[in-house]
Image 1 (tube, rainbow, N blue to C red):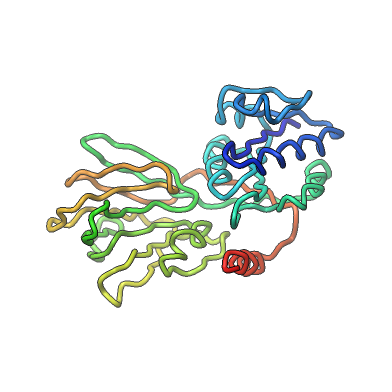
Image 2: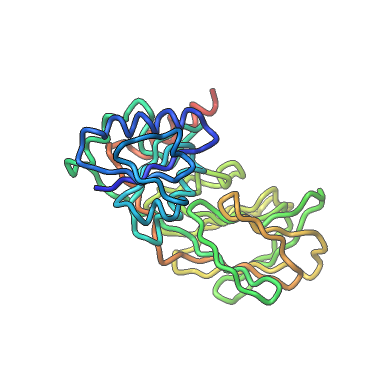
Length: 285
């Protein structure tokens, strides 16, 4: 078995626990693929150091990402098109998409006994028609259409399967997967959705209307966003909190279910709602 180890390079704890993982698994029949940037910090006689994260994932049978949700999501988006399962080890503040805490590294032995299940998580495919070009992105958590630095609201038209369903005057709109319902959407007042469900969640950000609430669309829906003709403000689209693009006046964003899924390894039987409650209590404290 070849295991990709991808830690967060900006977290010393993530590097420390990545080393502990390689040391724990050293007695098992496995090899490691590790990005070359960690050749001096995550050392192993069983490791092959590869040029970048994508090549590291390509070379592996499964991926262990060590860090916060951002690290795990970034690794999962490389792994999903290659159909590689991923296991998240939490070294962040919350870690909603992680399955293991650093104190549970010993559970990794289950990988070799087949004592685990793989959960498939729906992803979003985002198509942006921008300046005469079409760009495609994939999101595990969410895509946000939002205003720039100016404090004025923006006005957006939302079409479902080609038909206008609403105009929103707000700071922006969040389209999220069930996995992403516990991220930005939750902070904006959206509902929690069990991660195995298949749907698209739309949550307005600080809408002007008191009646603008979150909306759920079926997973076969195609939702398209245009700037309203009265909208003169800067509008940006941001995918999973990283890829950001300023939109032109005639640009559009289309959101639908991606054909690929993120496959997460579960080594324990933790109940989703118990995890959610524990994580939110940790963040509250």
